[in-house]
Image (cartoon, rainbow, N blue to C red; front, side):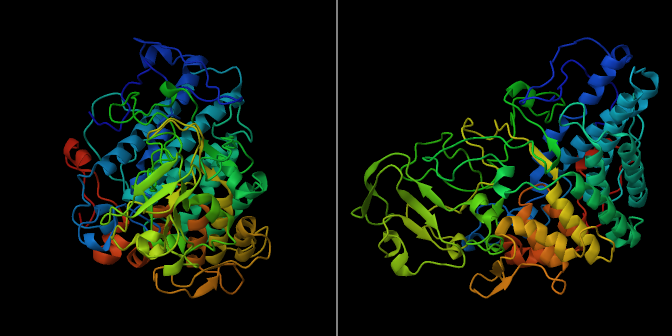
Length: 608
């Protein structure tokens, strides 16, 4: 059977959705041995059907390997000059990036499973009687939005894709790829109908709202306006439409005062106050993917199509690199938790910030590691057992200098001939491939999504993931204006851009980044405050990197703007060393699993 079609809704275990209140989920009931046809006959059954369309969003953001590495600002961990040629396929875009890789089949299957559920909800709606017609219209619109969201990610990733629009209840192997322009037309039809019927405020927090539909309309029109290879049916008027929708979102979802309060409130030092305060329900969040403290409810639906124990909760705190397990560590605990090397910031990324003026740098990167327990006479040297150091609780163990203030030899640690009893590392050491001592760590920790106090491991986070927030709407509006749109409510593209920058650095402050971020030997700087004369797509992409760092958007932003190849070649170290990214890589290969189970076999994309 085709995995991506929905043949019979399994209601043995329904993941149900968050209602208003402090992370309380609706009551979950086991209704085993009941078929979809016998259960989805009244309002209560249909309500559960629509709720079942939401949990797959948690699986959706697990596919960060297709969005973050292989770009200008993220790459897989393990880079060193000693390992050139042995890099990961998602960064090097070599022959190993092919139809057989698991990341592709996972993303494809999750999106089509979501489409299967939403098709069932849309198709069964006519037979359901609601006491409140507006409530029913909202539920249908939620399903249309989620279907449009799924098709939007499918068409961006693979180009022409199959587009089933009705629930499939029998075995079917025939697959026809629909031209991208038709897919975009259907996405916009679904979103337009949904936006008209959705409420401004949802009955339960976290459901799709009018604002979420408006945000996605802005992003879809912006993408279609670029009209990738003249295949999307777009035109210049799409940019004006994108701007108009973005302005609606901006008006309805005010920015919060401080960037750091968008995320769990915490200190970068585990020894100081850890509030763990939640601020995931703020005025800036347009559409969240929700989590709570219930491991069963938060469990993903990976692989089997049913709940599993894998990744129980938001795990974005653990998918970025860093190393808190140095001397003075308390082991694998919740203090620093688990920081994997899956999505390592490229050295160029750090150089896009003004470390002294941009508050996002201070929040996103932990540049010092502290001893959590006392250590006496630690032999830190790999070669000289007589060189020893002691640490008290709270002492600095390792420190990364800002890119624009590198340490001299005299300012370095004793492991490198300096006077500091801790390791002091400059950014160029991130790419050297040489381990100096047991004091060194791999990279400054990327702690943007860090949530204190959660159990050690990949998951267990309870903080909602903001898939859409209004800060991006400002950047969408600015991009649309750069592409020719006029009539922005706030003015020119530079005005929209600087609204985001002002929050990070202060109104009128002039932040400086590296003029050549890819050249670690250059310390020439340039302002990243926007003016009417310096606005460009690259300036916008740099600001998107700073503001939306790690927020499931980078690969799509680079593809949309035609900058994926140029910026990845220039700034991704694996690709810069031995990458073979070409125009064919602007779409991904159709998963081999889909080719194998279709008859006749679905056509593969060019170059794979």
